[in-house]
Length: 390
Ligand SMILES: *Cc1c(COP(=O)(O)O)cnc(C)c1O
Image 1: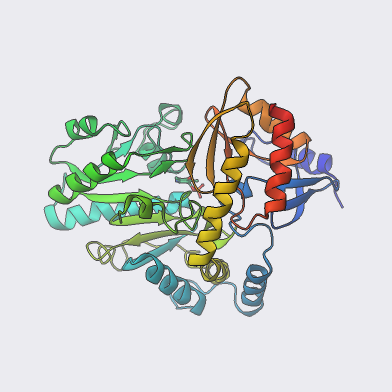
Image 2 (image 1 turned 90 degrees about the vertical axis):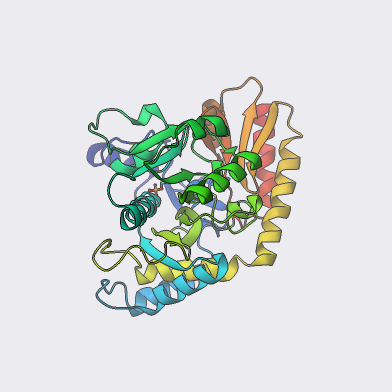
């Protein structure tokens, strides 16, 4: 078996150097614990960027995925398959959406949302009403359209020309958004809590106004819940905190427990917009990924979500006992940590040395622990953080 250094060397030789990777090669895991290729053990406060929602190798999830892999791995979308049918039904039941489209990532889910919004408007109003307002400091993905949608200048480099038709507006500033309204807008796209942008939640007043303006002008609201969805915040969708349901909601990261899938959900108003031949994905709705998704949805019920909220309350209380921590942001188990004096990237690296995986978002530390994390592992992780911070 290869040790960590062999694995790292092999990447350096053969894999494009697009990530600022840390010197950790994971080998196996169980819920909120993992082990690297040299046998060193870790507590996981990152869950693969919120993707391993049930932690590493949840028993029921593994059974569901393996059972499906032993039956049928792919069919193409010329045919139907049962796990995709079941996943779609559970998703629509749980969220109240009318129709789902399945892709393979968050970016693809957002691509679908963008296409859907533009076609909705084209079908009703013809050409020219194609612009989408997105928020400054947002993050919507890495494909050309989704980096164009992303309201951060740092991403708008090298790959010119970018996709036209995105207008950036300040988050939580309704007057700025109003000043950008003209007859050309077909949708407003937002994250209820900007994840990559630094775990920053939108204000209720701003969200209320966005929905009011959208309703009044037949503009669709697209909620990018790729990071906030699937129980991360203690609600199945973060929109529930705002008592809002977007016309379109996209999900990915945690929705299938670590398998690649992206979902674009559309309501009654726009569920029938994408018609035969207008959108497609070869892998979309893959039965193994969907079996993983079904296992997640069966677990993430109301009592599970209550438990997520309880754990979130506990971990937040414990974090605030650390003097170096200035304040916390986000909701539920999506946690941004502002430090008083220390550098978050340095803490992240030291935490790893001490057996704790954490994340950063902009200048903050960011925690996205598995939703199934144990109290024991919360305590152990917090103790590591405490020794590094205080
Ligand atoms: C991660 C993320 C994406 C991109 O998802 P990929 O699966 O990497 O394409 C899009 N939107 C938000 C809010 C995200 O957090």
